[in-house]
Length: 264
Image (cartoon, rainbow, N blue to C red; front, side):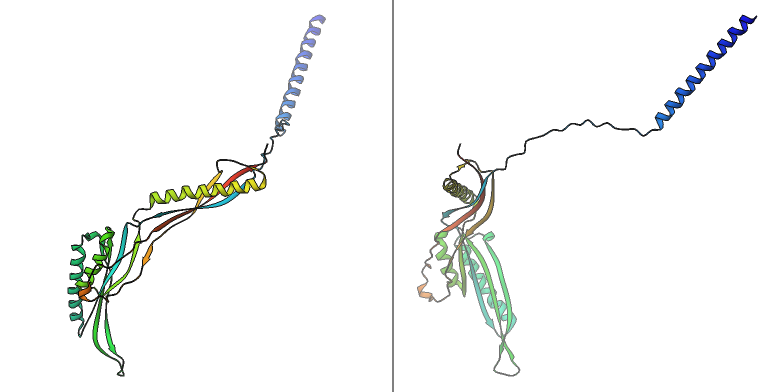
């Protein structure tokens, strides 16, 4: 009996010990879960070599292509006066119809003729006070594109003979400058490369053959203006008006950057 009691007491003591150990472990786990989590960052440093700065030279280049014009634009005007506005308008319309007929008879298409100015205004006698209206003046102007330049002189002369009272200037131009401008760009880049090479040689450096950057900076196409002509010719002197188209200069400018380096 005594031995049985001893065994029972030993078992109870073992059970109590296990319970106490389990409780302590749980408390420790609970305490550790309440602590803030920490992130461990590895101490890694990657060193990259700094990129070497390039030595650059920036230059501007210009190129020009000269062509003969293929288009002439002129303005033909008709001016008429009358005592009333209606009379001035009717007279002016009749004259302009004759001018238009002469222009079209020289092969000018309808799409190349456009009205550019129409004006009807009163005329005053300022010798009286107050000034009084003494009549009306009507002005009508058309813009004509002449593509066959060898007919330009005849177009002007025939228009004057038909009743045109003014030929307000002739402008020569090139209808499509796309190809000419591209050629001017190529010439501009060649000019820029030559300048960069000269700078590199003067500095004792070597120049890269291909630029690291190129940009367009300007473009121009300069028409040649012919002198204005009036209607001084008498009807018996209506020969074709002599005209000289001259040349058109298409220019381009570029800015280019080249890398230079010391010779190896």
